[in-house]
Image (cartoon, rainbow, N blue to C red; front, side):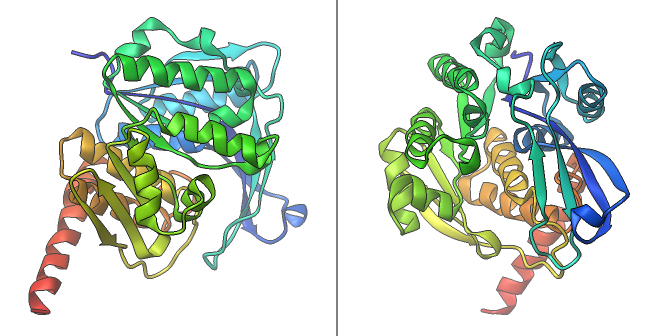
Amino acid sequence: MPEFDVLSFGETMAMLVADHCGDLACVNHFSKRIAGADSNVAIGLARLGFNVAWLSRVGADSLGRFVVQTLEREGLDCRHVTVDPAHPTGFQFKSRTDDGSDPQVEYFRRGSAASHLSPEAIAPTLLGARHLHATGIVPALSATAREMSLELMNCMREAGRSLSFDPNLRPSLWASESLMIREVNRLAALAHWVLPGLGEGRLLTGFDDPADIAAFYLDQGAEAVVIKLGAQGAYYCTRLDQGFVAGVPVARVVDTVGAGDGFAVGLISALLESRGITEAVQRANWIGSRAVQSRGDMEGLPTRDELLTEFDDAHREQARSHRGCR
């Protein structure tokens, strides 16, 4: 029996969120939280009851201690988080919006402790995890972090573990667009489940149609490709099936950051529970919609009890609506 259900890795930053709307230069009061796409997914899976190991690096500073303490409170196993005495914990400022628009985010992560992740951080015990989730953010941080991503994914693939990959493109972190496309696709080719957004898929593959984007990754070795279409829902394709799952209507969007991470939580959790691909995408859409209705990057991610009650209730209501339309 594996010690961990899921292994995830990346950079968690401290985040200072404005307490009121307006330009960041005019805001005087902030709340301290954490941010990071990779750790958002790890937290979401932990809330659903999975035993999740977190591999990362923080500075020997108060923000690093805050990050680790917060992750541990969320249930992550942080034994493999290294404290770096020479480099600081990355952080960011985030504006507050009340109209559903994307918030302003300013990053202070260059030269951070996490950018000094390297293959030496991979402990043999981590390779026994049942599943690995990776994104395109870590390889954008530095050459050594890129090497670690590649080695970790190769090792897990060779060990027969399942792998999921969200491109999560951060063009500003890469030296060039061509390098980003080449390296992200190199990692995606190692994953069983690939989760690009439509815009990301178009940039990475050169194809416009979701079916062609999916075919590109299936030809590289993926078993399932799920393309996020925002509020419209998602398109999925496997070697045996394909389809579209409509998005979940939302009365009011509060904060768009973290929606894709919530989507990943829903898809990965359902597939690890051996649910069918259609049900997995339905759960992914639901958690993604829940995320945009909450302020904060990961505050809207549900617990297992919330999933079992609210998601099931939503499905029953949807089923009644479909029957009424016949």
